[in-house]
Length: 291
Figure (cartoon, rainbow, N blue to C red):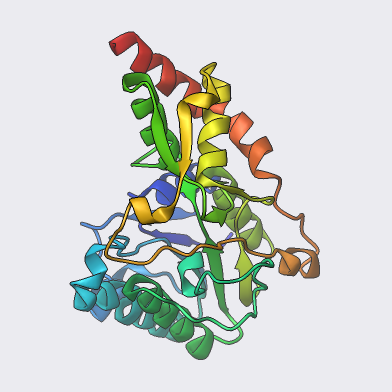
């Protein structure tokens, strides 16, 4: 088995990937282990004729608007370095990207090959990274886009909603942004499946299927917690003005999974139900016991 090198192992998806790819062939690097902006540091870590998974990213969406240099350094320039080193070492690269590469004004699921028109600095920097992978590694580079990610580690929408729901009588939640709640465990499983297939080049969308709004997502979380969903009021995004624009439409299509002969991602509700049993229910119980 070829070595699998995971960059960004300390993040939410990185933790899930460690579980899905666990084995003697997996080597991991957290932010402090490898400087992805330095070619020598990257070269010292990446394997020869193996697989590289880049889950490292600058994810401060709002801060990127006032600090584009940092966003581009990590999401653009560093990805170019990783792709260049992977090419020299004859390794295949799987690079994790985002729905923010689209402008969010659609009404149909974005196809993998749909034109990208990012509206934020964060989205533009992530698109720059995608372009480096696709241009430098046309036959050995994969771009995996995900969105609305939640998981066991780090900050996520479900954990925030459960904390607020346990401490406040009512909540205002945005109902004019549509997307696909996506469990990090499922994304990690999709990436593991790509590795088992030799990491075919191109773009895939690694989101759970179906669609809802943040309000609909929050309502389902309240239902699972045994709380009254009527406590949540749907509001416009205009109530929460932020420096970076958020896509109003973040529904991604999954056609390329079928073309690869692989299963289409399961529905977000099915994934959330399992995530509730494994990760979120214990978290909710811990919150309630602390009250």
